[in-house]
Image (cartoon, rainbow, N blue to C red; front, side, top):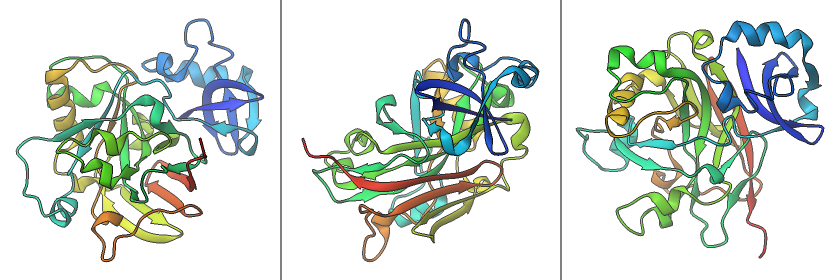
Length: 283
């Protein structure tokens, strides 16, 4: 099942995406589950049954919003593919590299990735996003999958010079309009085995990142076990699992995103997240 957050006829809602239509479940479940975050962990069969009563919208008539616009946390994993570790000149790490992204930096499928006025070093990072559906602390790897609600595409677009002002990544990862997330989430039951699925990032049609999800250094159960050891994972938390090699920053010469570019992140079993690049509006 594909679930998404979107705006239709001026109202923010959520629902099922099927073929070329969006089924508005938010209006049916507004009392107890007003947004997708609050619906995570519910019986999917209930949603399927409710779809027959839901208002329908053509996909071209909706505005896509971040899959989870209001996540309690966005935890990002850095340096999680061997070819990305090598291109950065770093050595393998014993533990996952973590940093945080803020919810208000996110945008949906089709929205503009914003190049800030303070930098031209805007880079792409195609990633798999894991959406947590069941809360937990000290989650064992063997139990990790049961805490996953589903998966989506993420573009952790990064402002590289600001990322490197200090040893902490936070500034370069949190400019407004740089965290593209969508178009939808695919529920865990529908995704199947993760490892063989391919992830690609394309800029203006050229393939610049290409890997399989099985090439992650720290796999999803490892990441969930590690993160849940220091923080309680909550429904709606988003974990961006890291980007493969091929980022623009490490190319010769570097390839920076500029207004007019189109960036696509495609993951097998999920779909394609597409965003154009725009300049930050004048103050």
